[in-house]
Length: 263
Image 1 (cartoon, one colour):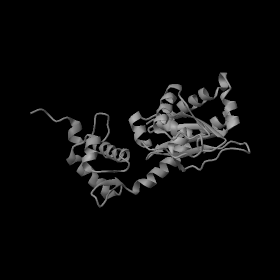
Image 2 (tube, one colour):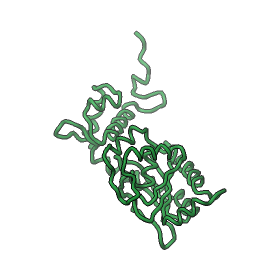
Image 3 (cartoon, rainbow, N blue to C red):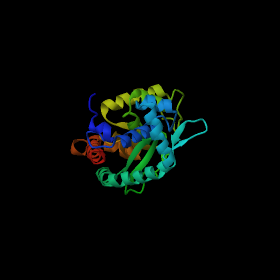
Image 4 (cartoon, one colour):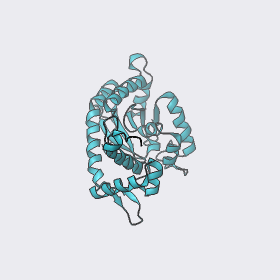
């Protein structure tokens, strides 16, 4: 009989990680990807883990409050995760603040950082413009992704099928006459954004407001950086070239931030 590898005997993989912990987090992420609710069979299919392993891990996660079982015998993300998520979000904003401040100083406009969570955009960081007329979004605010620059930059980072699932097939909510409400049209817009490396919110959430957003590469989850302000001022920034060119400046800051956030 062949000898059992040390990783199998101890539950520790070759990289030094604890396999059971890795699998527990894999299940939590599978639950999140499923919208927060899934049956054991669905978790087995999405994670690739055997059912006995899932039973054991889920039972432990339920006991600790990180997963709940509902009346239909499906499993949901538990309330104990809320505190972890809120704390992580605050820390993410703190780590990003020097980079947001740099972007604000370079452009004179409000700089934002957002992540995608449960199909929604969550603002996790912001440094406001010093100008009297400026954009303001509360950190922690949740908005729909289809009508914001950061939201579209986040969707553009996903595989098309995943973005399509978030958008759905029905007309999207119109916030202004400029909002993209056709999911198919928006998907074409996202494909173009992947080619150019940035997206524009041209008064799609609020009349008179323009926003330019880029992805933060290397972040552990879809993350986007943006500048927003009055339409005329943002358009003026877009006309600058050379070292002051808006999108290259944003992408360079985003790349450095991504290296800080990378796992």
